[in-house]
Amino acid sequence: MPKKGYSPEQIINKLREAEVLLSQGSTIAVVCRKIGITDQTYYRWRKDYGGMRVDQARRLKDLEQENARLKKVVADFALDNAILKEAARGNF
Image (spheres, rainbow, N blue to C red):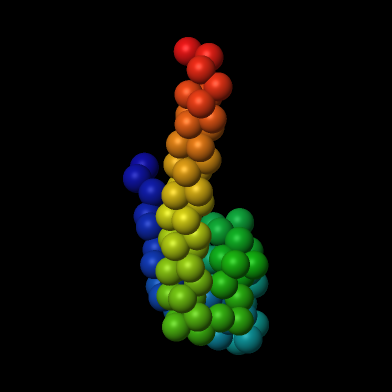
């Protein structure tokens, strides 16, 4: 079964819907069934996105992407540095 990818905006909207249903007296299992996710997904989303607004989630996602890009750049520079040090020693 292909994995559904939810955007942060969709996740926050589903969490808001879940909170409304929970405040009406539904159980977690029933709420998760209604919004189409598993209990584990609900708890993970609540941990990651609980209390966030849509603009905050969008900003978080952008920062995570920028962080991943910068980590890759640092790794490339470290590899280049190691190669240059090895070449400078003359052990090839």
